[in-house]
Image (tube, rainbow, N blue to C red; front, side):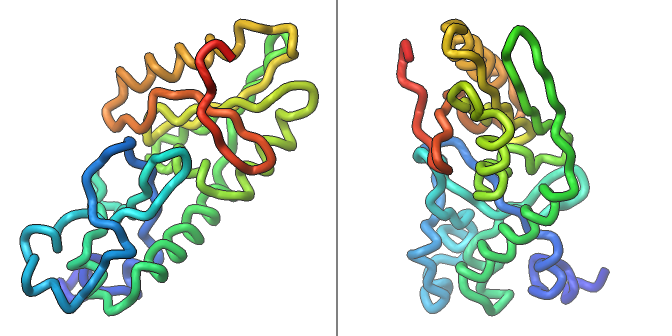
Length: 210
């Protein structure tokens, strides 16, 4: 591929590739709202190369990844300047790509003793990011919300777990919390060790003992 047609330089090439990813709370980055192409000559090689971030759910920032063989490159200010677009176009394009991917990627289903689980573990690295999609949140609430609250976890970039259990199953929340913490500790690309409550499309952290 000619350098001019590489996704890092060519916006039409990048549009079909870029995907949003969730990052751990506190990950350093440059807020997309602070992007200023006119200042890049002052920051090239420093802030200009810092990945852009958009605000995400429950404190987790969102970055945009350019897939490459065996790794992903996170979009920074220099990429956006080379593309000649605004950060809003980058995140909206990435979200559209994620939705298209999600619509064609199946979920694994498990059920036992009244517990119902949906798992996204495709191996492609976009699974946790599915939680950003309103369509996915509605799907999970529709599939799992009858008879119990819906809990979710995104311990690594490669894993999203959602489930519900009867109100009488007091251990379910702690089991999911423990699973999320263990999976996060073992992950090559960790995201968040917490469990969350999904309700009417919104996310809140699962409180201790709840």
